[in-house]
Length: 275
Image (cartoon, rainbow, N blue to C red; front, side, top):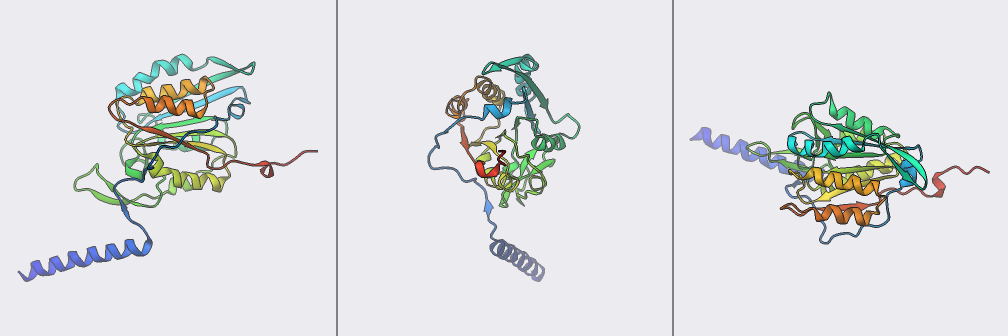
């Protein structure tokens, strides 16, 4: 009986100190990501002039850990058809280059980081698990590109559930180029989980990047439909309002919505003038 009392006292004391540490560091356990009370209208359009100025449109699509094989293969015919073809923008030819990376590739996490840093890649898309706000998962559920916003998140892929800090060391070491590109994080609630941390890093790097995120659960067997539609809209030079409308209309049992907001927009003072 004395042993049980001592054991219970030790557990209670340990939990008390954990709560105190979380309070002092300002961290909270976030089981449900923040969501907007109302939808946000998308404004403007992608900066096609910047993406096409070198005569190429380079796109890399990453399918994360545990993505259904049928979903990946569902997108393959469209990618194969488009790769190497040309589109014409304001009378100039632009060659399409599409690469697809999955968990069976060698070190896909490093490829993802390289794609983010490469100024010649115009569109980077990740579709898969966000690991409850910890980051993108690649070869397995613990092979994570850490890019969280600092919350203590509840990992529900293990039993009993465990609380883990959503750190951002991989994002912090990524040097985004000062050239335009589009990054799409097609993960569950990527807007609540990642927009803050990614937006801060873009500002630090002075990177004029359009970040496309999602609210509500998104990971399912129809992700390839959303990704292919997204690319088709880009190839049609659509504005963000049209792109959002088409993405949001693909409900497939679970409604999702695309969030498109500018983070860092360079102004004239960021560029050297030549007289």
